[in-house]
Amino acid sequence: MPLGLLNGLRYTASRVVKTYLGDFKHLGRRYDEKLFKERQSVRGSGIFTVQYPEERLIPPENFRFIPFLVYEPALDENGQPITDPATGKPVIGKQRCTACGICAKVCPPQCIWIVRATTPEGKPKPQPAEFYIDIDICMNCGLCAEFCPFDSIKMDHVYELAGYERYISHVFDIHALSKPASYHAQIHPTDWAREEAERKAKKK
Image (cartoon, rainbow, N blue to C red; front, side, top):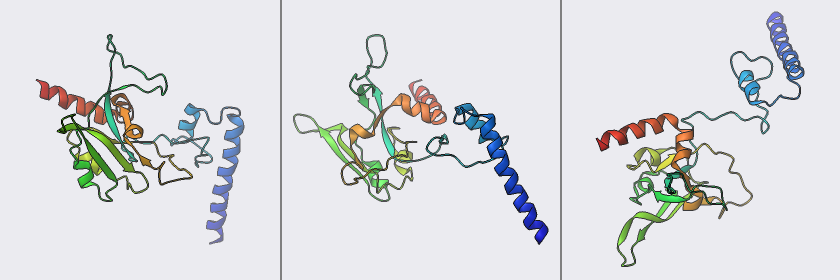
């Protein structure tokens, strides 16, 4: 029993020493991205705790948080996305969402509200006029993204959404939820490649 206790203390002490040795070795670039990946890998030594917020783990591709709406950006005459100078985001060309309401129906906590757009004559249009998600109610299950027939709703990787007020700022509208297709391709490259292959196959 005493030998096991001493072995445990020895192991802990060696980790502490290796941690400080690593800090001195990488003095001035402790939070370098390449170094951070090395310290978090199987080859790392010393402390393994992420020193948040200076260090952040990169979420895996299938990490699920608040859903977002995918839109196709407006393009200029050269086929390049047009950027809004005020926000720096690509201008919305076309929302993939058709306001079919399937995401709202399958949502377990019922945190999605959709208002379908209408023509000047009062006829329904296949696009949302309003789209809301209460992020405090959302349970991040991903069913909305799974059942969407148009690949228009996906799960985001942004998780730092805490605030001092929840009744207005935590109810995301269509503007806060909309992100370009290029963003979806960036955080979900595997899904994006599969979806693109399926779309090309349908066109043939």
